[in-house]
Length: 147
Image (cartoon, rainbow, N blue to C red; front, top):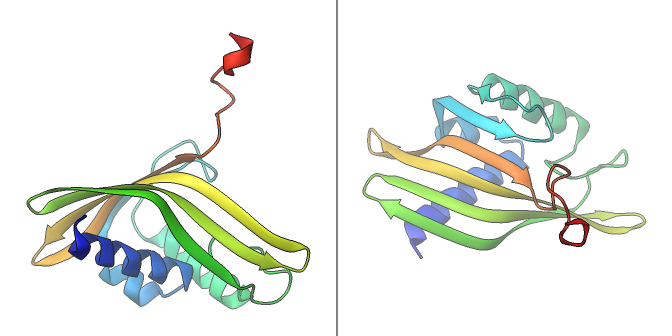
């Protein structure tokens, strides 16, 4: 596994989880494109969407993927089945993101599949594209027992 890309990716994701907008901007290209299936079925462009979301989460004391129940919830982020493909100054990281949150009623785990395209720009790694999809069988696909 490419440790340089893995460490970059973990720092990038930590910035999102901790609502660190400055670190997010340092690790993300200005012309970022995203597909976030739970937000909209359409492509999102640029950084303002996430800046707004991260600032709002920071004000509420919550983190990405965690329900705060009126207080900052303890959470952790894991990347299941992380696979990194590197081609010179371009890398693709794909994984299932697991966000575990400690709630009064117990631990809740949210998951989704994710791919991030990472490119070296002016000597610095930047995320240029992210695509997220459900980690469960989507409704438009017939279940095996329904075929």
